[in-house]
Amino acid sequence: MRADGAPATVTWWEGEEDQVTAWMTVRRGSPPFEEEAWLAQLAVPAPRPGGWAIVSAVPLGGLGQALSARLRDPIGAGRRGLSSVAFSAAGRPLAGEADAELYDACRAASLALVAERARDAIVAREPRRSGLMLLRLGDGTDGPELDVAPAIDEPAWRGRPIDLELGSDVQDPTFSSETVTIADAEVTLPCARLQLEREAGPVQIILPKLQLPGAPDPRVHLRFGSP
Image 1: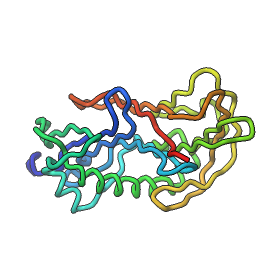
Image 2 (image 1 turned 90 degrees about the vertical axis):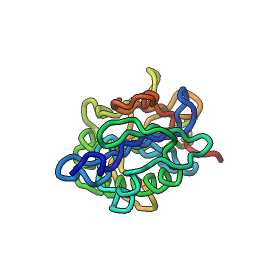
Image 3 (image 1 turned 60 degrees about the vertical axis):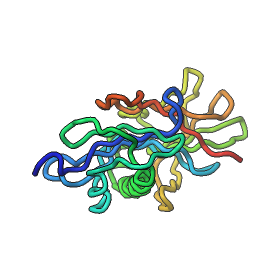
């Protein structure tokens, strides 16, 4: 198959380059799935107060035939507050904005893939190999609390390709199980709860950096909705 007949690599991000608030990269799959578009990275804010922000750094496929076909030519109408870079399957930069409606469709399909991944037994059994980080900010009796799933009581429990920046004033977590909602699907996962010694606000995560000339560093400030 010619490389140009495969889905393009596209990264979209919301916000400004120094204050990215959402991130998604899609690309063609590895052999033998070169004709399929796969999710490479995703970081989206919580849809509402008390909801879960979703972060994925594990390749997940596939996004379906229709989206794979559309991603062979992803350039279209952009949207204010949404930026992008795109590269053909052969690695050539594509001029113009990647289509905003295509972004919406890929994001919805990607959330469904993450929900499916979250139900895999390895996610609860070996959180550090899951490639996922799901975050929820809430108000506890002693101030803001951050739930992180999946997480179990083990050494270096935060160790995974996704870096969660919390500073040095965070106490040891407590561990339990929580019901996580992803794309209207629910799954019960082991969870760590952290007491934050600061006002509630955006939580910063850092994804592994891919070779995406023209894109900012994948440092995402995740928000948790407004009351």
